[in-house]
Length: 196
Image (cartoon, rainbow, N blue to C red; front, side, top):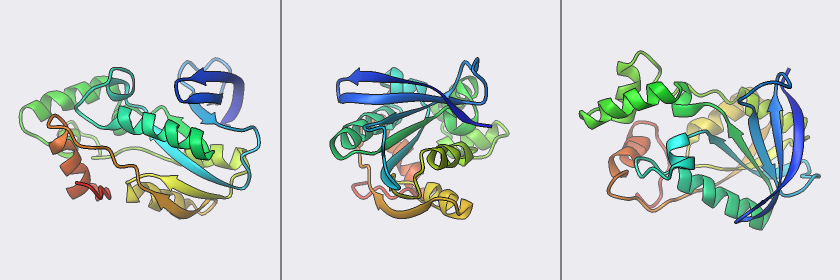
């Protein structure tokens, strides 16, 4: 059973957040993290569900737009209120080492989806069940989702326990290093990249 283990106050460059760890055991070394602007979010909230990307989020990689999306989400949520759910599912669910293997295949000409398939994984193996469980634990029933990914909206809609009543786009200016990646997101995964 996924549950909230610990909550702290976290001052950041974007402003103060409440940071909570969600896990199934107290000793889980890789809990999901949420950042909120208030203890009482209410039944409707602006929500960003962000899947872990160590290379982009922590190291500032230009191969993707993940770190920039994370920072822009934190800025928006600090400004408007809401919650960021940080899911520990690196590399669209394949883990860091396999993501690095996929990067090597991308350097040889495969796109991000085909590289995952070549390694024997789904093009996108992420799950949003834990995010839904966290939203339910927070008492959130309706969300405006901060996303460009229609599959994320569909996954939440299909689960039926949280209603997506709106979408707020999260558009990051492309770089030459991630132009192909963003094109794959748009052409293969159907992401709604309004400026690309």
